[in-house]
Length: 253
Length: 356
Image (cartoon, rainbow over all chains, first blue to last red; front, top):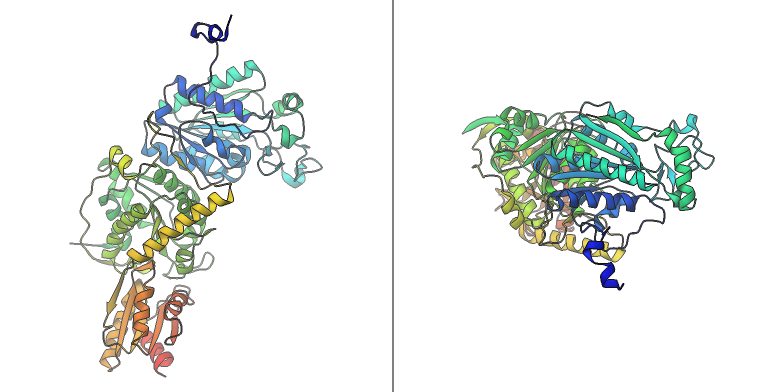
């Protein structure tokens, strides 16, 4: 069997989606961002929405998301992505409009924009990467940092009297009437990746059907920030993050 | 011909000039802008979106989002709210997005007062947010100009891909005057937007690269390139777009320099002075950026002295002095915190400071 036989379309079981380009990613080994980017790109291709998608990039590690997916992007100020998405979707109601935000962006500096976009039931999807840390700036404590979890600004572990409790913002958002779908997933196993992809697809379909705001939280690893190997990060996430941020739907209407 | 408040005029003008989206947050003394829009329900006529945001921070970022789609987007606020928008304005300037921001100024600093002020001059023309950027700034002095400059601000914003500000104050926002509303212009279609603003994020067709609205340049030399582009555009604006009004300047020995409502007050001062035989003229900058520097230089060749009159501690006076560059004395008279000077008061200051 030669190479031509191997790449025969009949034998093709997997190919990279055309919505992703060839730009090498800047993400660290073991980071969840790359997988989530790929899932979003695949869903956009499968829904045939490449020419109708407008995405909003955050401030944080995913600030460069616009480099990797060949769709139109707007890069927002830190935390303001839901405000941008609100205006884009209101002015272009037949487009797929989604934000891609980390925990610092969405659950700290952008809390007001997040809650109010969700409360208005904006027909947007929010992809929320929760790794419990500020990755881009070097591993500082985030609103979602676990109790006792070490970071560069909680070197002895998060102490509740000093820093408060971890914020389960997806649970909070699920209470809002404007939110039609709030779900939490991860991308550490093949099965989990498949579930996350289905969730992204549902979130995108919800927004095109004007059902309200959909939020897909992806509990993620940050092996550089956590100072662990990628494999250890996955184990640590399952053992420590999942009890605080349990997998599955919080709301599905 | 209609009779209305300056704030109402802005709302009518926005709808009539084909504005696609207004995003705002209530604050005195400009809340009538959003109230009028909500009453007029333009979403039923032109299709314009009007949305009350959760904060001025959200408003200005909604404007960013809308402007990024090539849409005519605007917001309005008053001084404390505009302070809150400064981050967003810096991003909008850096991302080269056209939009209109209305500031109906009130007295500060802090929560201040709801009475009129002009103390946001520095914040507006010197760059209130971070980094080197400018905004085209138009200063209306009447209800008619509130409408006219809203339309003009959109034109200039799109001509130069820059945010434009209508810098008004609590008097012009609240006072009622006669007005002729601008003619109706239809909103741009998406096809028109693609021609006017090919950079707009409307969704990537197969035949073009993705459009990215962005102010991030991690490489320093790329960031300097962006700065050079912006600065080049600002120099062009300075060459092309200076606007001012001159009243009784031809034979003037003394020149008043004032913008906005203070220029209306100074117009009366000119009358009072001339009745006393004093040859006083008035130069009213209409554009605060670009500033009428060259015109002031010309006057510095002829007049004996100038008086900058402002409702602030003296902000524009610095630009007048830079223009005049020591050629003639430039003095300042102003009131702060929401106090409005009277024409007599200005005349008194003119005599005391210039004529002595």
